[in-house]
Image 1 (cartoon, one colour):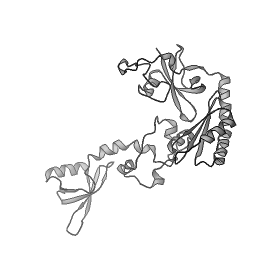
Image 2 (cartoon, rainbow, N blue to C red):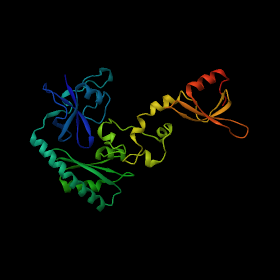
Image 3 (tube, rainbow, N blue to C red):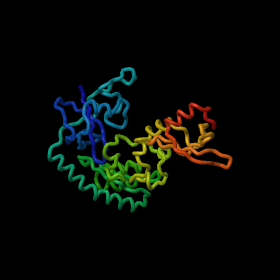
Length: 304
C-alpha cells in the first residue's frame, strides 16, 4: 500500500507525495522530496488517510494529480497511473540538510532585496513579496503582486544571470501574500490563513450585511486589505436563525393592529415593532419572538 504524505514548505505552501518505505514518517519531520528538476526540503504536516483525504481524488497542480493511487478509477478511461511515476519523499532529512535549508532561508531576505532593485531598474509595475530557494538551489521562486499583467521576460533573464539558477516569477493575490508572510489579526491571534485555514474561500460584502455588521472597510478588513475570512464562520448560523424571524420592514397584523417590524435581535430572540398609524407611525414595543408567533396565530395572516 502506498502512503500519501502532505509536506509543507515555506509560506504555508503544501504538496502531496508518496512514501514507499514501510518505516513510517512522523509529523513535523523534515524530509527531502522529489520536485521538478531537483530536490526540496519540507516538513510532514499530514500522513496516511488524513493526507489522502486532504489531497482528494480530483486534485490538480500537485504531485498526485491524476487518478489517485489509493482509489484507482478504471472507468475513467485514463487507466491506472503507475505509482513509480509519482513524486516521492526520497528520504528523511539529516541535520546537515536542515542546516543547508536554514542557510538558504537566511539568504532569501537579501535575494528579495536584489530582486526588488532589478524590478525598479526595469520599471515594472509589480511589488516583490517574497523569495524562496529550492533546497538544491537549482530554482528560485519570486512571488509578487501586481494590479495587471506584467511582461517580466527581460527581468527573468536578468535574475537568471544574477543568481545562476532557474527563475520562476509567480503572481499572487493580496490574500495569498498575507498567507505567505503571516501576521497578527485585529483579534490578536495569528492570521487564520497562515495557521489553520485549509483554503481561501471567497468573501463578499453580503456576508457582513447578513450579520448586520458595520460596512466600514476599516472595521471588516484584514491585514491583507480584503474582507476578513472570519466573516464566513458564523454566516450560516445567522442565515438559518433569521428564517425564524419576520423580515425587517414587513407589516404584520397583530393584536395591536398593523405593526411594522423595525428590528430583530436573534440572540435575545426579540422583535421590535412600531404601530402603523395615520400620522405615519406610532408607539414602538419589543416583544419576544415566541409571544409574537402565538399572537400572529390568533389573528389574520400578515399583510405585505
